[in-house]
Length: 123
Image (cartoon, rainbow, N blue to C red; front, side):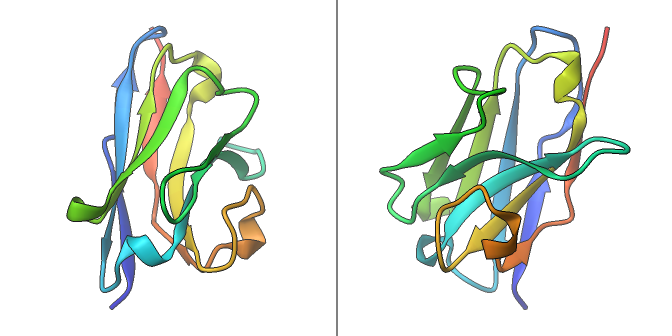
């Protein structure tokens, strides 16, 4: 069974950090580009970051560039999203997704999605 599972979300104060994990089961992440997306209440799902198959290329939304870092660990079949200097506007459910076609900000290019993990930034 192909599955992506996100973890690491929670409540954090503004300026704090969290590291999200995206673990795969039933397939190897090395064959896929991985993206992180987020969706706040009442808003559309938006792109956060993506990493290529090899991990040599990354792409970030302007709103998170310089604060978030995406990385992958092939040995653990896991992709991470390190989030620093968090702001209240980063509050959302964060999803990871796998694409066999492109490392992209376009949600329609992703084949598999996780269920999401809640990130709340509040004092």
